[in-house]
Image (cartoon, rainbow, N blue to C red; front, side, top):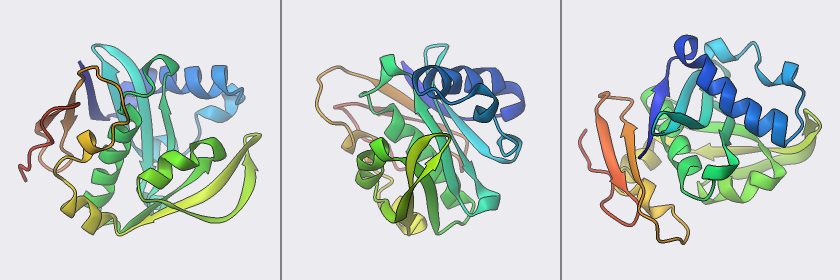
Length: 190
C-alpha cells in the first residue's frame, strides 16, 4: 500500500535524502552538494511510502511565499499518481498556512504535470543546477482546495488498471484519509 504523510525533517532526513539522491543526483546528474540545501530545515516536507520504502518526496517553503520544490518520485513508482498525491498534500499544507497561492521552479520536462494541477508558466526559461526550469504559479489555493477536496486523488490518474490504495494524512486534523485508485474518492471529513 502506498501512503503519503507529512514528514518531520529532523527524523525523516534519511528517507527524504534517499529519494532525492536517487532522482536528482543519480538520474539527473545534479551535484550531490547542491541537492540538500540550507532551506530544508525551514520547509515543510512530505513523504510517500510503498510499505516501508520511501518512494516520493516534496517540500513547501512557507517563508518564501509557498515555494514548492524538490518534488520527486523514484523511477520504478512513476505513473501511479504518487506525484499528484504529494502535490495535493503540499497544497493542503499551503491552505492550512493561509497561503492564497503557491509557486515553483519547474523543470521544463515537468511543465505538463504542473499544468494539469492548475499551474501557469510565468516568465522565461532559466538554468538551475544545469537543468532548464521555468517559474510556475498556482493561484487561489484556498478556494481550489475547499471546492475540490472530494476525489482529487482519484481524478488525477491517467490510464492503467492496477488497484492502488493511498493513505493521506490530513494536515488539518492529522487523521488518515483513504483513497483508492479507480475506487472511492477522498471522503470529506473536515
